[in-house]
Image (tube, rainbow, N blue to C red; front, side):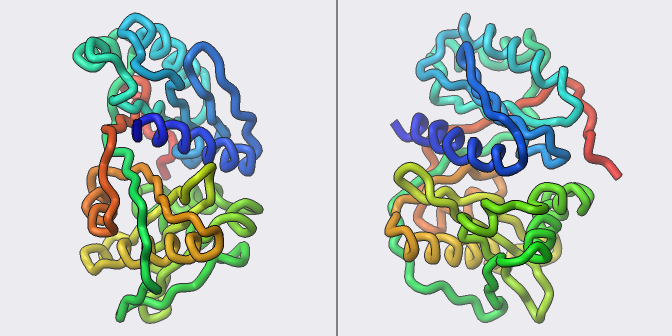
Amino acid sequence: MEAVESKNELIAVWTRLIEDRGGVPAAGEGVSYLWAGSTFPFWNTLTLTGEDIPAEDLSEQLVRAASFMRGRDQGGYLWLFEDLLSPRAKEELERRLEEAGLEIAFSGAGMAGELSLSEPQHPGLVFRRVETEDDLETYGEINALAYDMPTRVGRDALAGSKLWLDEAYAFIGYRDGEPVTCAASIASTGSLFLALVATLPGHRDNGFGEAVSRKAIFEGARATGRGRVVLHATAEGRPVYERLGLTANTPIHFVQPAGALDEVGD
């Protein structure tokens, strides 16, 4: 079941990423806590660990997740994989979220597929691998601006990261010398995990996101021999990855406490 793979790969990869940021992953009573206490909200993650989760168990787990998130200084998300819920839990999801004091901030999809890509090229881009602290800063800033966050949040997200320099196949695409897009692949249990793909506003709809994703996947596959790719896409990003040859397998809802304020404002 690809929804299980999607959840398991999140836990496997995010465990490493959170440890890289100084967090201590934990799990208990059906919830995985992948929380770094970062200003970058995607490093503050919870997810449910079960499969075919009954409606009553879902409510209990949602209450625990809500209590945990409300007790933290930084905002984050519960990544809820819809196809891991029982049929009744799916039908009653909206009500049970409301009862737990949670709401869906936005939704996306788990995606996966077997890919064999040729050396990617784009006439408007030059690709450079992330190799220095300055590169990390640039990569983080692109992500922050793409998600309408302050640039300091993006810098904090990757500053001093050994994993991003030593293990990730992370690339930035430059247009006329300006960094405009980025993507990274990370070797996981049996696949490449594509993460933190972003393109600056004003440079979208030029194929940049697809091109830099191809570059990150191609280089990761060439180095590791892995051809299977797993990722979690926003609704806006999904068409990009479908053009790569990946298919959606489960809706993912990014859930936060109801009425949560944006804690990464200027």
